[in-house]
Amino acid sequence: MSKKQVYIMLIPTILVMLVFFMFPLLVVLYNSFLGSDGSLTLESYKTFFTDPYYYSVLGTTLKISILTTIITLVIGYSIAYYVTRVIKKKWWKRISYIIIISPLFTSAVVRSFGWMIILGNNGFINNLLMNLGIINSPISLLYNEVGITIGLIYILAPFMILSLISVLQNIDRNLDDAASDLGLTPFKTFIKVTFPISYPGILSGSVMVFSLAISAYVTPAMMSGGKVEVLAMLVYDQMMQVFNYQLGSSISFIMLFVSLVILALNNYLLKSDWAQEGNR
Image 1 (spheres, helix red, strand yellow):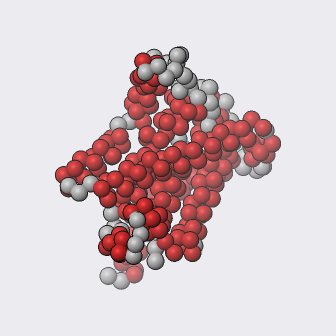
Image 2 (cartoon, one colour):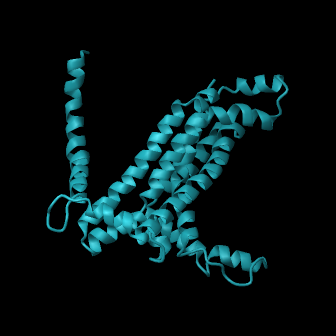
Image 3 (tube, helix red, strand yellow):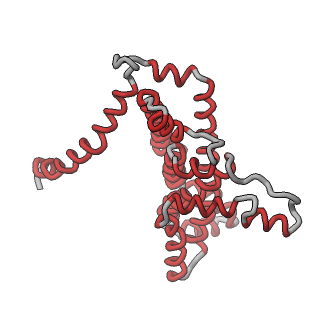
């Protein structure tokens, strides 16, 4: 097949991308530079970067997103390692994969409602801790940053786990045997062999989770009860309640810019000596 034929076959896909992805994005970008009188201006961006309130919302969003990514990485790596390196039976692995991806088949609204019931003052966790005598009164796990983080971890964990599984299951097990023959303990083998080789999965999973966490709306809106605001909620408020489309568009592109910076950092790290050494 010639290059010309390949390009012709790509035309429908390119048109779909332009119409349904690039065009709306350009409209939002154009709106972010519009003033109240319709003139081109940087007023919306100036408003965001000069108002301490917007800074605090940005800080809260980044804190929740980073914390979610770190905890999800720790939990996800443990699960992915267990599934790929510990479980031997194929039928149990299949069941494990089904359990891992099953949350993705449920609406984020339903999952958030479930966690609201579990984390409430009369929820399962508080009742369990009080029955065990660990606490005397319910602790606040809902309508705060803790509740939002827990909800995001549960919802985004499958993305991290699947990214890590795709890397861990392709690591040659003969490397473990070679490390053992050289006198390395299983723990040192993990630290010096398995973990460095899994850098690409760690980076790709972390970028995916962080990008989804920083742009999440449904889970923070439900789990916060309106007491904690993140950037996605701020965009919704500006566009749907205040009808300030210019400021809402600006905040949207600030979120996109942060995600692109993280993506660029990920690509840099993947090409760096740090990652290449792990793959040798």
